[in-house]
Length: 211
Image (cartoon, rainbow, N blue to C red; front, side, top):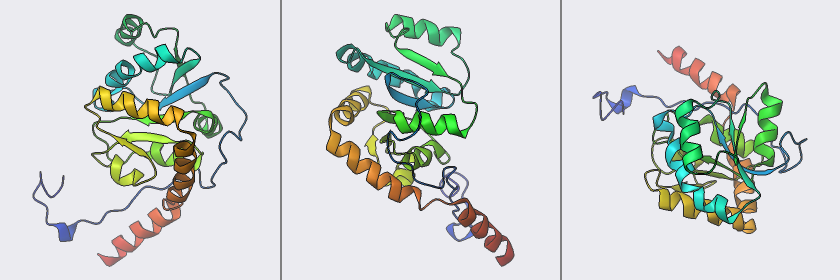
């Protein structure tokens, strides 16, 4: 964006990745549960660029086919009236759980016991929940474009965030393919180790010193 929209020369740009809030990899389903139901996880705010509306529309047939499955929305504030109206319209009002996040232990548990994390943003500067999910043993579905595909690399299932059909198909696939789940957990753990706050700090310091 700096190059294409602002005309900044590539030689003036240095990319420094964020770190990983969960520095130690966590084995899948190994932490104490805070939610007993089987669930798909969504984390953070639900602004338009986060693509939450397309997500809930895409999971309607999945929820219909899996009556024991829920959607957990972690953090991001309680549902607004318009969101509640939309959930009711889609007959999902009893299948979606809002879960506040009090600390990292709760967040780690939510990742750890999720069937998968869906992070379908249309645009992101980084996409920290992808790395957090990797570290916590959670399979990830995220957008192919923006920064998210770059961050996830080959450790997540990538979707076209503008296509509800693609989103629905990929969620259904990952829910039913145990081999793929295990493969992504393994790759996610390896990918999470690439992101380290000490590395971020040292890289930033070296850049300042070089100037």
